Image 1 (cartoon, helix red, strand yellow):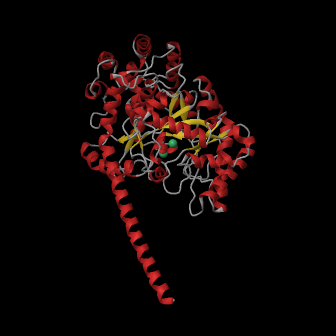
Image 2 (cartoon, rainbow, N blue to C red):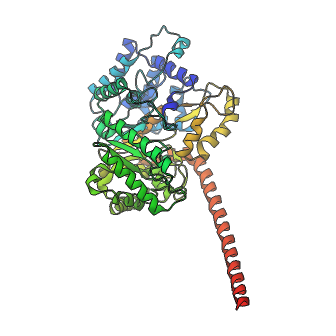
Image 3 (cartoon, protein in one colour):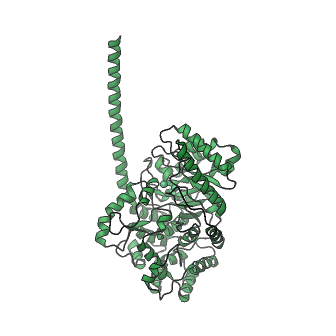
Length: 554
Ligand SMILES: [Zn+2]
Ligand SMILES: [Zn+2]
């Protein structure tokens, strides 16, 4: 769901985005209103209301949301204020995130900066009101435009953002991150499902650097590109290993050209070989890449331990790093993916569990190597070893885990990247079609694991006329809300009424999905134990046979 094709989206989503941009725009009067209200009101509340409303409706939204800040507002009430285009289809998450966002949000430190961000965004493109929707839909959409879904919170020590699209050039990722109010972001530097890619264009590079300066992103600290899913540096096959290494090194060099110092990648898989040899191949490839570069830090991501993937247990990552010469250690990093580590089996929910995870990280790897986080909830239970990202607070991790994360002082200054699902059925299609589609959609989104199978999904065109694949659109306001939600957890008392209400609300929204995956997991465990018993039975029989034969032989 990430990457170039995610934003090379369907015409429908293009149209919608441009329609939105049009809706949000920016007659001088309106943008003045926007800025005024930011100074006066709680800014998130305001920007929620901004999402897709006419000024009149928005005013109504502000009143409602303003009142909602303390008392728990039911999703439906907020929903009616905001949804215009999406009346036919509203996914659950949208409802609760709307209300979640009205709950509490950190104050924006500097409203002047907020204004500047918005003016910047408005400058990018202000579709004239006289342009019809049809005309607008013909325009090429390269990056998010117009007024951001949420303004960025300034002055925090926690840098939260999402894996945004870099379609049509890396420079667009900057604007896309501004659009959702991210203070950090991830992107793919090139297509993650092709081996051959055009070189980084000079004009893209220059624009990227300029946008980073304009929007005050520290590329060295808060931008964390994600490596290709095709690359397995632990690969045994020498030809494939060379291909993987070349692509990896090419990405690292792109980072250096863009002033980016952190580069996240998956450690890879053992395949048919042994863990020891795979670890050693991975460490060797990394060492070689480190010698061939000078400023970038490759960051190994923790994994869920599915199949033969390396990096489930923290000790496996520690083992890789220990085989890299010390002179390079300042340029080696680790990224904790909350979904992956939890699905592998680590308890990140209880404060004690979280504390011992941090202790084990320090013991097996060393906290000095911790450079980034991927913030995802998990649709699958702890220990399931399934990579299924859920929206924050709706999965098995729940809001408590993210409270631990957002209040962990040792995470200050690190990029924290959301990779949560934002696809939803395309509301442009009829309800009936949507109903029949949603079953397939479930399969696509939930049955397949979040990372590798994404590629499979990607090989299909995102939108087929009326074919099998259900057309989906991306709802980036989900990220905008999740960023604010996470930021709001900083300093929040987890025993407060406020926290408990949020926790319950989000948990309820994810209940059905969790139950489904709990059942799947239990069925799998059952099958496995039956298989084991069968094998055990066979083994005993074989032993008995051998014993018999042995007797006869003597
Ligand atoms: Zn991740
Ligand atoms: Zn994942």
